[in-house]
Amino acid sequence: MDAAGLVEAPLEEADLEEVCAIERASFGTPWSRGLFEEELRRPGTCVWRVLRVPGAPAGSRVAAYGGFWRAVDEAHFTNLATRPDWRRRGAGRRLLRLLLAEARGLGCVRATLEVRPSNKAALALYTSEGFEAVAVRPRYYSDDDEDALILWKRSLTPTRPT
Image (cartoon, rainbow, N blue to C red):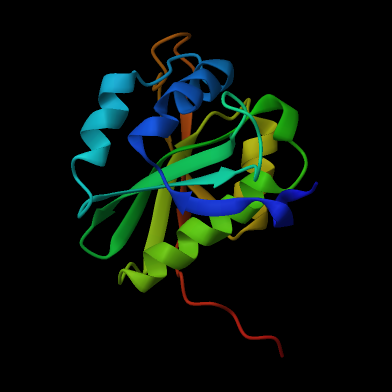
């Protein structure tokens, strides 16, 4: 199955065990379950989605998850991760596009995020979807003091083919 067969849904508390496992496999300073629970208690500000594998057994249902904070007319992406066995199969791209469309539907006109310069796969995904590096946050990541690139997508208006 490719990413087109995955089912998009809101993140639910029942997903958190799998999401936290993906988080630990993906990030040097993973979010705790408590942080995700807090995010779910703020649906007006925090938007979270998952891509699920239809018919998969418990423990392997979530292929990818991601979320952003809505701040007036901006979407600040906080986390986007793909389960290791679903990487390089289009799940991250599909989820990013779904989240950008949702942000646009909520009235956001631009989006931002931070990414490690060493995370070449994520950086390639984000830049291919129109994000541009505009600044650096020195020593942003506490696990190794790596800088963060601040990326912006200046317009969430879809481009029309010419």
